[in-house]
Image (cartoon, rainbow, N blue to C red):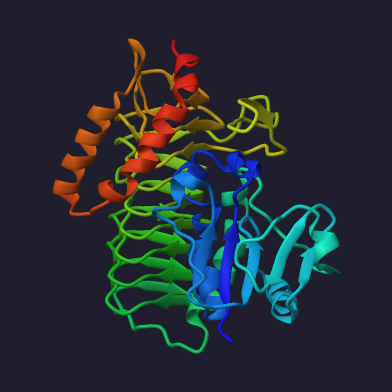
Length: 400
């Protein structure tokens, strides 16, 4: 009997991961090299589907693929070797539990009633130290371990493509996919792996120090410095100094400036010369805006940088304050430090904050599609519309 993986996040806790989970299920979040659904599909060699909120279900639909055997995984759970062993040993009618919540359910149904699971399914207590994406900062905090997990997952039993002698390679922990262009680059894998995807362009004078991953078709521009715990998503462009950061697909930080302890969403653009702060002068822990409580949450982290939702953009020489959260589709161009929270679909300049009208945003996306050739608008339109309507209260309370 074939197995289907179901990633469940149709619950209030998904809002803790906004603005990124506003435009996708948590199970489609990227940390490490792969998105979570890609990881689970590769691990079990099985199709992956989503049980998520209604407004995302057209783009991320539920399907049983004609199967009657389902492994339902809480979508913010991160895979590990130990956890995979436990998941593979689950029998139908069993639920895997940790101290605080359910982790996974083996069922003959893909959609179930999640109330009182311990009464309807045989409870199995995990012995693993399970890691979760509970909050925004977890995406970059867990990136190092997930990058190593994904590196092993993607390269097991395979040989790296060869690269020319023009490169300076330190260590043997470098894997290059076929079709990547790597010339005149310094690759330091003495302390961690370096993964370079298909069709990448790593330009001369670039420096990569593992743990680093560069996704398919991405470009690392001349002189870029990518330091440990950095993942660059497919189709993105980077330059300058990047450290402890996850950049998702088709985004651009294409010029000089520092980006650290940060997460950048899909289709974002950071203007030339922009940098973020990731450490307060008083060395106190950083607060981040929390969409669940609509207030600022105290993290336990001393270093925490920029979190930019999908299709947000900033002007040249932007300065992002410590623990800055920018919502989906926002445009920010101000000469002083950008505030700690900019609501979704905001248009923020030195003159103040206005609502980025939905029609103008759609027109911008249409122009973007013509230039980039990346077709995103039709499938994302209902999602953008839902977010725009939902966050009006944030816009109203974020004027300045």
